[in-house]
Image 1 (spheres, rainbow, N blue to C red):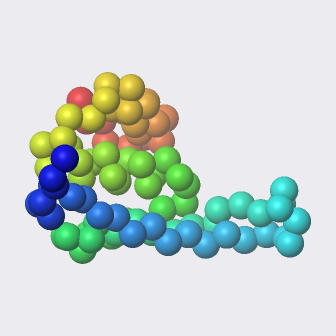
Image 2 (cartoon, one colour):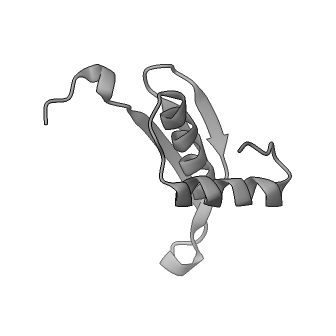
Length: 86
């Protein structure tokens, strides 16, 4: 499969982990994800927010995202009281 750059979507994810030196006590504090080509950045406090950002960009670009991802994200938005997109 020969992909051109217009077929490639790149994201940079940077996460801050805090807690004690013990592995079991460490947790995600915050971070951000950046869509490379547009420069759009979203600050996050959980891994689900990273997935949400990436899925939104893929859908904007015409990529058909698996239904299970769309339903999972929709459900999480409802619980957080965020915008409800169908």
